[in-house]
Amino acid sequence: MILLVLATSCGDKNPQPKPRGYFRIDLPEKEYVTLDTMRYYCFEYPTYATITPDYHSLQEKDWVNVEFPRFKGTIHISYKPVDGNLGEYLEDAYVMITKHIGKATGIRDSVIINKEREVYGLMYYLDGEGVASPLQFYLTDSTEHFLRGSLYFKVVPNNDSLQPVIDFITDDVRHLIKTLEWK
Image 1 (tube, rainbow, N blue to C red):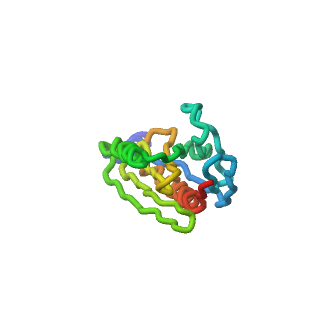
Image 2: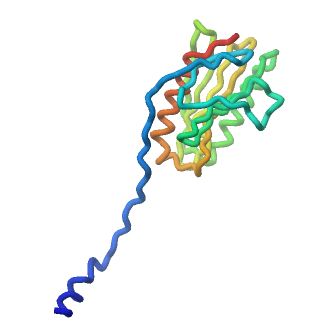
Image 3: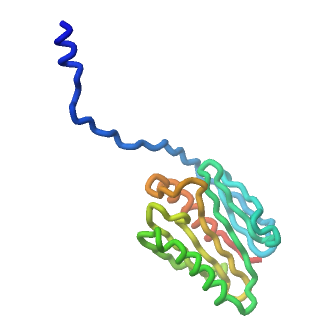
């Protein structure tokens, strides 16, 4: 009897590692409120996000963060008035994108044109597992206003597992862009 138990207790001699599992992500319903306390712009942001000042640039009163505490993500938004220096701001936005080239497997862009609201710009989608900022954008009216945004997460970048959240927040960024108005 003991020999039978010992003979059958030895399982497969080639154990297989189990694939790594990830937590299930519950996404909230989309609902938006208006941020209209800024001097030069207003837009709608999701109710499950919070607006905080940019504590790294306290002298810049028109810089804010749209924080997603549930997802440990933040859209950092900076604003600068245009005074003949639009080319400089566009170059800075380009430099910020190119800093991610080492980790990115691809960078796609999408042109933004809203003639009715005078909002023009580009949205960049940065693909790759180790990309720190998977989404960046800039918006301008070409004469007075320049707004730039970038999405960061407070977790180690693993965009394969973050992809559902990145897609979810990307929809919120599109809504922000669609509702942006200059003051």
